[in-house]
Length: 354
Image (cartoon, rainbow, N blue to C red):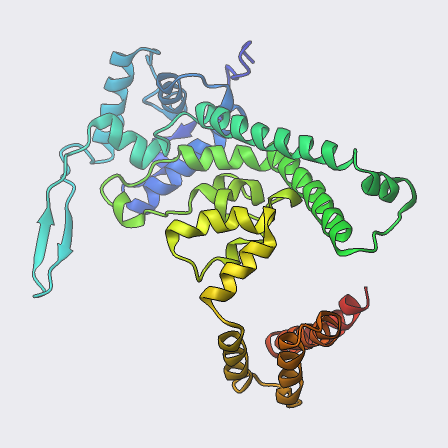
């Protein structure tokens, strides 16, 4: 074993054990990767990676030196043996009339052919690992700092010390987000210790450069960081302070007004709703409710109940309105839940008791 962790002696591969088919090339590449894998992250340059791969292949490893000219010569010998020298790459597509159109492509160099079909890597795994770890560490620091902030709050301290369960909605929300942050931190740690290595290898593997545009995945970045913080804007927030209570309320406003109204919702709710009801009257809102009620698969007819809600709202009897409206919200949610997941009815009953 050398100081860098790369062994001086290792299992070798005889080229005579492989044919010249696509299947054989795939098996050869997989065998090379399997031997390199235990120490591949110790390899610090692309040239060294090519050299270490060629060192495994008998008889082409004879007289091999770790310099560009020697590596290029041995790559050419390997490709020539496998019948890959002089082969033209053809990429085509079918037109609407059924005719084939050949697309222009640049012929790959010998080194590119070797990386693409034999070595299997065109990026250095050590570099990919470093890039992934830097970002994962950033996510871990964020989650850890957020947990520290939660654990400085009285209600979380009471929960940790005595298992005290919060009673109001806001406190329950904070506790839920705290638990979410704890779970997220553990997912990040697990990925950092294990999964990030496999992902670095995958990111280093060659893609077919001639077809990559057909396989573009807009959300591939999520696979690099398989937890909520890694999903960016598409992930669930861990910070209860970032819950947006206004976003869904400004859909009726023009785009130019929406941002102002979001701010107004937080700092001047009275003015917010005054403007909201100028834009959409209570009559229109109740008309929408009555229309949608006629299509919902409800067990009991709730028409009269909602007529009473409208009367209470119009007469500004807010306590009575709230007392009657809240069970309707819970009831409609329950019916929706049962409709979507009938096998989880027992879970819903336990959930509503909490």
